[in-house]
Each structure stands twice: as C-alpha cells, then as structure tokens.
Image 1 (cartoon, rainbow, N blue to C red):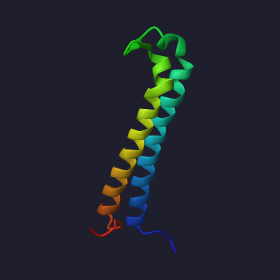
Image 2 (cartoon, rainbow, N blue to C red):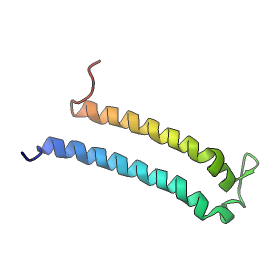
Image 3 (cartoon, rainbow, N blue to C red):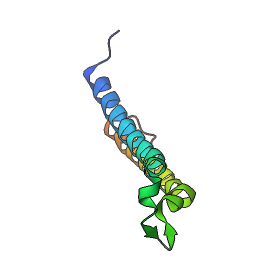
Length: 86
C-alpha cells in the first residue's frame, strides 16, 4: 500500500527538521575543531573560543537542539493529528 499524500507531507516535515538539526549538530561539532587555531584568537568570557566551544558551548547547543526537536515534533504531530490527547 503506497503512502498517502498526508503521510508523505508528514515525513517530509520530519526529515526536513531532522536534517536541519543534524546540520547544526555537525557544524557545532566539527567547525571549532577544524578552525581551532583561528578561533583561539577570539575570546568568550575570557577563554579562547575553540576551548570554550569544546568544553561548554557545544554541549549547550546540543541541549538546545534536543529541545527544539521536541517542541517542533510536538507541533508537527499536532498538525497531522498524531499527537497525544490533552
């Protein structure tokens, strides 16, 4: 049985959200490591930026990504009638 147009729309929204958040994750994970020398010329709260991103900044972004995913998926599921009843 082929998926309905509504199911395709749901999965398109789901994959767009997941892909976007994965791109943010990859950017935050790999860019500070790759450009560490250049980023160390900048400081954030008195620490070199690459060090801060490795020690704290990326972890904060990861938690924000999880929160954004949960909120956005709740909204998408409500839009398509898949959310839990209130």
